[in-house]
Length: 509
Ligand SMILES: [Fe+2]
Image (cartoon, rainbow, N blue to C red):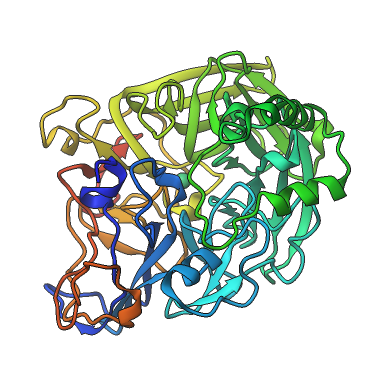
């Protein structure tokens, strides 16, 4: 097995464990009450060397913290039809429908539901508080219709002012449209808007400001040649033409799109193996500002140099609230993606970059903070959409050739101070999903604060929940202390990124 996404800290965990009353080194604050959850791809069967990191079956891990104790550790597969078939279990109710996939990218809680999320056409999976699978979730029937087809996004953003979850969803079956939705605090989608983009881009994340939804219409796009590669030779051209027409103009009726979705659905025991997106140098790179209460025709587009963005740190507006004069967008920028290596991300360093859109002049500027390669950026999410002072990310050493420890020096930026009274500023790092498919956890009460470089404590004695879940050749796990890898600090170092100098005497640690 030589695929790098099946080795080291990314090697699949072959067993499910439940461990209770975990030993604690040090002290857990008594008022810390919640779950530390993370999720990532964890193929239930050997996917072979052609495996794509993004396409492994999801496995969620969690530690329950309360009353100063680590109550339990659990890890569980997200039980899609493919997973239950592989495990020899009855199928989860509702699984096996078009787009069915063991969500593997993000896990969060909203409106009382624990949700495992993935993008590009597959539905969220609801989990119990103990991480067992309930089934696919369509938000009470509001995630419906052929063009929604159960799909959602891996990276919704919660508006801290309302508690609502904003999302931008993409799926090539939507043609040249992405969907902006708002999931209310009641767990139902209350607003859904289709927005026309330049083609069928991968839109892994977006940004939310007080008045705008910030869209990344960038040159990683649905690649018909990848999808048709395994078709009979005579079928390839007609299939490519049909899909190109669909992407370009949305001419197909909903029933036909529905049929394509059904035929392309995961058939239970067939795991997807191809990520049909690649770099298109001819595709214009744009950032779009969609007014929160606007429609597709209201988007202001700003062309930028070609690049790709997986993740947003944050974005905010400057100027009077009734007439902001600029929008600042901090992201991790890749020069390109899936251009030379379709099994990436593997196209060179990814750096913290600020785009500033001047709403008056109609221009956009770009500033790279430094050369530090990093990903998975986070802020204190109580500041989503408003000005932030600190950001946190995971630094990569090999991409920059830096010596170990180089990233421990937090770069500083001399920028104006934050609004008085905001809650950010801890020098401790907040980790929610240290390992996973570009994944990020979330939840106002489900995080643990760890010091930089600190590993989560090892759970105590673990047992295999069900022998059938073991793969051939795997150890029994009975009484073993073996636990899934949490964070390999030799490969990835949590780091702090100071965007502004700390207040004098203002913030702890
Ligand atoms: Fe992600």
